[in-house]
Length: 102
Image (cartoon, rainbow, N blue to C red; front, side):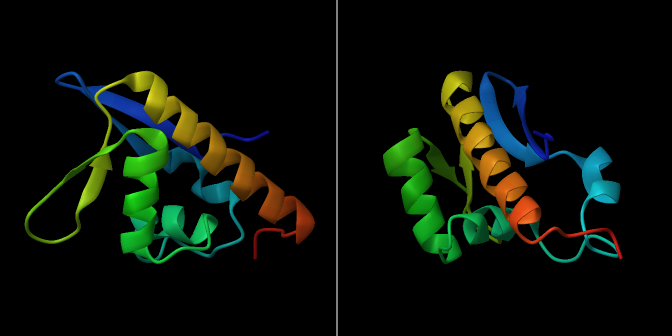
Protein backbone atom coordinates (compact mmCIF):
# COMPACT_ATOMS: atom_id res chain seq x y z
CA UNK A 1 0.00 0.00 0.00
CA UNK A 2 1.36 3.41 -1.00
CA UNK A 3 1.42 6.19 1.54
CA UNK A 4 -0.31 9.35 0.36
CA UNK A 5 -1.31 10.78 3.73
CA UNK A 6 1.00 10.99 6.72
CA UNK A 7 1.07 12.73 10.08
CA UNK A 8 2.98 15.88 10.92
CA UNK A 9 3.43 16.83 14.57
CA UNK A 10 4.41 20.32 15.72
CA UNK A 11 3.97 21.91 19.13
CA UNK A 12 2.30 18.74 20.49
CA UNK A 13 -0.44 18.91 17.85
CA UNK A 14 -0.66 16.38 15.01
CA UNK A 15 -2.14 16.92 11.58
CA UNK A 16 -2.92 14.50 8.78
CA UNK A 17 -1.30 15.94 5.67
CA UNK A 18 -1.05 14.93 2.04
CA UNK A 19 2.51 13.78 1.43
CA UNK A 20 3.80 16.05 -1.35
CA UNK A 21 6.31 13.56 -2.80
CA UNK A 22 3.46 11.31 -3.92
CA UNK A 23 2.05 13.67 -6.58
CA UNK A 24 3.78 11.70 -9.35
CA UNK A 25 1.97 8.52 -8.40
CA UNK A 26 -1.50 10.04 -8.74
CA UNK A 27 -3.48 10.08 -11.99
CA UNK A 28 -3.64 13.88 -12.02
CA UNK A 29 -1.57 16.17 -14.23
CA UNK A 30 -0.88 18.48 -11.31
CA UNK A 31 -2.27 19.14 -7.85
CA UNK A 32 -5.53 21.02 -8.06
CA UNK A 33 -7.55 22.45 -5.22
CA UNK A 34 -7.27 21.63 -1.57
CA UNK A 35 -6.16 18.24 -0.39
CA UNK A 36 -8.26 18.93 2.70
CA UNK A 37 -11.29 18.49 0.46
CA UNK A 38 -9.77 15.30 -0.98
CA UNK A 39 -9.92 13.81 2.53
CA UNK A 40 -13.65 14.54 2.67
CA UNK A 41 -14.27 13.10 -0.77
CA UNK A 42 -12.50 9.86 0.16
CA UNK A 43 -15.20 9.41 2.79
CA UNK A 44 -17.85 10.51 0.24
CA UNK A 45 -18.73 13.48 2.45
CA UNK A 46 -19.03 17.24 2.17
CA UNK A 47 -16.19 19.01 3.96
CA UNK A 48 -18.35 20.05 6.95
CA UNK A 49 -19.56 16.49 7.46
CA UNK A 50 -15.99 15.22 7.16
CA UNK A 51 -14.95 17.56 9.97
CA UNK A 52 -17.76 16.16 12.12
CA UNK A 53 -16.57 12.63 11.31
CA UNK A 54 -12.98 13.57 12.20
CA UNK A 55 -14.15 15.00 15.51
CA UNK A 56 -16.60 12.25 16.43
CA UNK A 57 -14.79 9.16 15.10
CA UNK A 58 -11.10 10.09 15.19
CA UNK A 59 -11.10 12.42 18.24
CA UNK A 60 -9.97 15.45 16.24
CA UNK A 61 -10.19 19.01 17.48
CA UNK A 62 -11.45 21.53 14.92
CA UNK A 63 -9.33 24.68 14.51
CA UNK A 64 -9.69 27.85 12.50
CA UNK A 65 -11.80 30.97 12.36
CA UNK A 66 -11.15 32.28 8.86
CA UNK A 67 -10.66 30.31 5.69
CA UNK A 68 -10.75 26.54 6.02
CA UNK A 69 -11.47 25.01 9.38
CA UNK A 70 -9.15 22.02 9.76
CA UNK A 71 -8.89 19.02 12.02
CA UNK A 72 -5.96 18.65 14.42
CA UNK A 73 -5.17 15.85 16.82
CA UNK A 74 -3.92 16.10 20.37
CA UNK A 75 -2.98 12.41 20.28
CA UNK A 76 -0.76 11.33 17.38
CA UNK A 77 -2.30 7.84 17.52
CA UNK A 78 -5.63 9.31 16.43
CA UNK A 79 -3.95 11.15 13.53
CA UNK A 80 -2.20 7.95 12.43
CA UNK A 81 -5.51 6.09 12.56
CA UNK A 82 -7.10 8.64 10.23
CA UNK A 83 -4.07 8.69 7.89
CA UNK A 84 -4.21 4.89 7.65
CA UNK A 85 -7.91 4.98 6.76
CA UNK A 86 -7.36 7.70 4.14
CA UNK A 87 -4.47 5.75 2.58
CA UNK A 88 -6.56 2.58 2.49
CA UNK A 89 -9.42 4.37 0.76
CA UNK A 90 -7.25 6.15 -1.81
CA UNK A 91 -5.29 2.99 -2.64
CA UNK A 92 -8.54 1.07 -3.07
CA UNK A 93 -9.98 3.70 -5.40
CA UNK A 94 -6.83 3.79 -7.52
CA UNK A 95 -6.69 -0.01 -7.70
CA UNK A 96 -10.38 -0.41 -8.55
CA UNK A 97 -10.13 2.09 -11.37
CA UNK A 98 -6.72 0.86 -12.51
CA UNK A 99 -5.72 4.49 -12.90
CA UNK A 100 -2.44 5.41 -14.49
CA UNK A 101 -0.78 8.81 -14.49
CA UNK A 102 -1.93 10.82 -17.53
